[in-house]
Length: 317
Image (cartoon, rainbow, N blue to C red; front, top):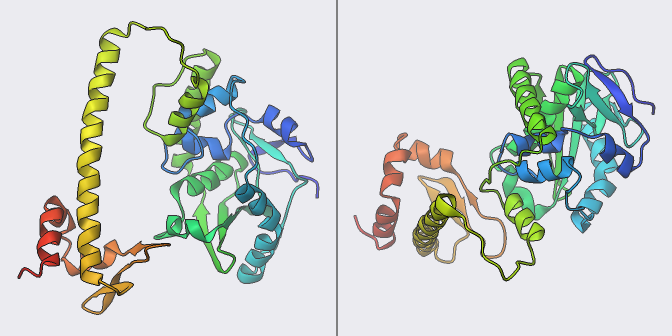
């Protein structure tokens, strides 16, 4: 179906191949989360920067990505069946751009037939089910909000089919304050791109992978890094020590929980399940239930969590 007009956006391309679509894309729904440094984003400020200056690493379609694309139509049909909201797909691949900020672009998975909602469809493998515990991941919510900011539509629906048998959907309303913030950050970032000013390093796995790929063959030379290098090395040493301590604390807590559960998969507190433990599979922890039991004193409890858990695991009173 041809791409319809939307309140705040104009059509950039429709029925385009992927290369054409990528050529038109500037700041899109999947990259805004990286620019805003939202947990779980597919990429980082550096990977987005490299992509926009034409030096990005090509991403090959994985089995998971191919499966998601294959099952998207079925998931969309199920969303309509469960919600009663009829949808349609503009000619793939369709891209819109904001009339107020042309570098802001977005492509919907679906639009509502009434043209009053932006819809994103996610086919989620069962191994990623834990990512959806407590609600939709923040980077997917940001993608929906970006679609609303670009399109001007009042509401977005995020539908996830988890493991092929656990459908969930979320309603995200247009938030003008978020739109202004995101547009401002996108514009500032794009000015850095135009000026060829590399983003500062961040702690994301995406940046780590990008740097390893970019400098995969180190030369047998030396470089004078001065104070900046000394500071970075000192930070690395501190981080390694902290990671070692954190790993020890995590192992202590996991071992204490396992010792209490023994052969059981589920642990309860006053009859309320607070942990589901599977050695090979998903583990579920209910912080709200724990917080309720502790009377809102979780922060105080967490200060000495390792000691307290260890005492409980030993049967101390």
